[in-house]
Length: 85
Image (cartoon, rainbow, N blue to C red):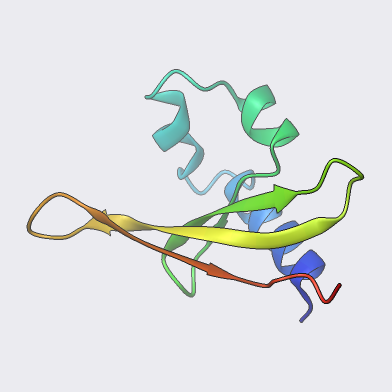
């Protein structure tokens, strides 16, 4: 699956009623804001996805943040799905 498909799949998963959207709503972000930013949830990686979109509209990469926190209260973060250009 290419990066664009990963973003779309994760975005649909977040909005499918699985309860993950409540994480953002509890922090004051409404569903419209989450939708417009193309934020998603990757169940396989147990992480939220934040696509980095260029000014011209192309996908530059995907920033992942784990749902769970470590003993110090920090979330694991990493990047994947970088653009080919």
